[in-house]
Each structure stands twice: as C-alpha cells, then as structure tokens.
Image (cartoon, rainbow, N blue to C red; front, side):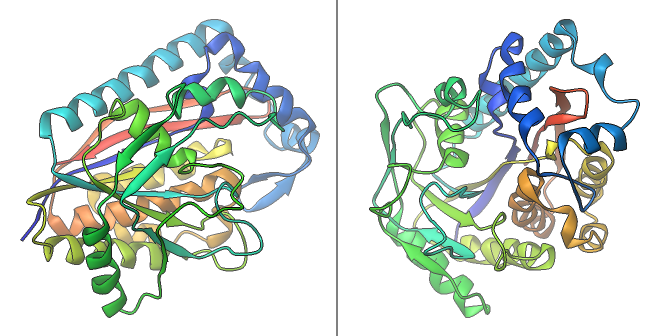
Length: 331
C-alpha cells in the first residue's frame, strides 16, 4: 500500500519567470484586454480601474516588484528543496490545460494522462500576448525534456476513481492537433523549476477549469481529491507518493480577499468554507484555484500538517492585474 508522503501547492504564473523590470510587458496586454474578471463580474480595463479605485500604483514600483519577485523565488526554492529532501517514488500532478493540448473540438472535464513518456517541448510559436515568450524559460529547458510516466499507476487511478462515480478521460499521448507539442505549461513549470527536470514517474491529472460549460465544480474537485487519495493509498506499485497542485491563486485580476479565504481554509482544513464560494468567482486565471482543491481534500483526509511558505500578490498594473503567488506544502 502506498503512503502519501508530501503535498505541494505552487503557483506557475509567467511573472515567476520574468525579470521584475519586465513585468510591464504583461501589463501592456492587460490594458488592451476587454475581458477582465473580478468577483464574478466582467470589466474592461478602464472600468476595472474605476471599480478598484484608488488603485494599486503604490504596489507596482520597481522596488516593490523586485522584493516580491525575490520572495517568490525563495518560495519556489523552498518547495524544490522539500521535494528533493522527501524524494518520493512517484507523484500525481494536478493542473489544467489552457487550449494547449485540447481545443473546442474536444474539452474533457477530467483527464488522466497515462503515457509511458511525458514530453516537455519548448513552445516557440509567435506569442499572441506580450510577456509570455520570455516566461517560457521557466516552463521548459531550451532543448526540451522527456520525463517518465507511470502507465500502470495511472490505470490504477482511473479504475479506482471511476469506481467512485467519476467519468474520466484517458490520454496516452499529446493530441496531434495540439498547439503545444508537449505537456501543458502547468506541468512543465513543476517538472522544470521545482524538480530540475529529474522527476520520479508521474501521473498528470488535467482539469478543465477554464472553459464552459463542463468545468468541475468546487464540490466535485474536493470529491476528486478524496477519491485520488483512496486510489493512491490502494496502490502497491510505489511505496511513497507525492501530490502536487500547479496553478493559482487569483489572477489575472488579483483578489486578495478570496485568496485569504482559500489560505485560511487550507490552514484549518475547512472544506465547508470552500464549498460555500460561488462558482462565478472561478473565472479566467482564478479558475486555477480549483487545481488546488483536490490536493487540499486529499491532505485533509490524510491528516497531514499544513505549512505556508509564502503568499505574494504580484501586481503589475494600477487596476490590480497580476498574479497572486502562493507556495505551500503538507507532510
């Protein structure tokens, strides 16, 4: 029977891989974006700026950005050391796809990747949004990499979780029509930045948190975590398993009030407060908070001790756009 020896939650936003003096590249895109989501409502940039008056000009100066970038790097370094010290035999990574491997032709709600190899290939297409290409260095080594999958472990998870009422999609390779030839950046960042491209065998769990109408609900994500925990505990192929969640917290408009509800729920094992959160809060990048919910539920079921490394709201515009970074672990 496997033991769950570690849980890690980490943000993966582009600001983590962009020098702070170039965070303005993403802010330029924010200012022309006509669809910003905050507290369940949609804004263009000017209306968002008015709604969040007096704004966040005091939090986007050079000195503040440098401090918050440095704090984020220390948080990532801490998680990388923790993973190396614990040295699990296998891991399950919970993340999401952003039209990188799936499309509107096919968008599964929950996919288990069961390939023997997991390719991470640089995404060198011309960027559609400023500030994304420079961040690719954080998602993938320059020449790419291939990581070991865990097909038998993945099939065990599929059978076990399906037996508890989940209808899952399975994937053995990256779809041929994918816009990214390798695994989505939510996973590439974890493999590359936290595990130095030397991970143990892993099973990616790919959630559709972004695209209506089949996003898993908050309650469903929590239930998935409990089922994943049962599946892992029933596995006999590896003795020591880690669960990693990649994404979040609030972005592309930072919502510190929401983030602190989520952080308090993690600290107190309070799943009821999470279930009370309205579904319309989880739009755009903030939907990635749902990637953390299965991890939270699994760690609560295990009774693991929660450790908050840091929470860093990385603002990049006066209207409060940016990415709130969080780094936590359970053991």
